[in-house]
Length: 72
Image (cartoon, rainbow, N blue to C red):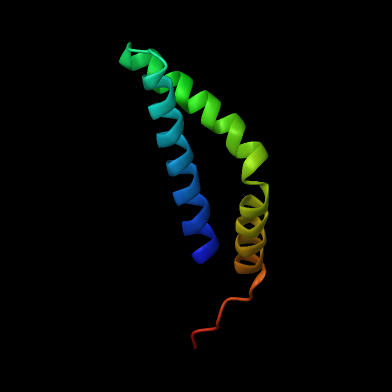
């Protein structure tokens, strides 16, 4: 569960930082500000968070491949 939480928190943090930087740069329209922040943080997370994304993928893959216990 920890890799999922780290990745999610990192994505949210990156979005908030991007939102703040764009706001400080003068982007005032809320709709455009949120859309641009979402787009930029998504691209940045693809590059910056690849290790965390791989950890989440491995965790989920292990979880899916684990045999389910038999309830008899």
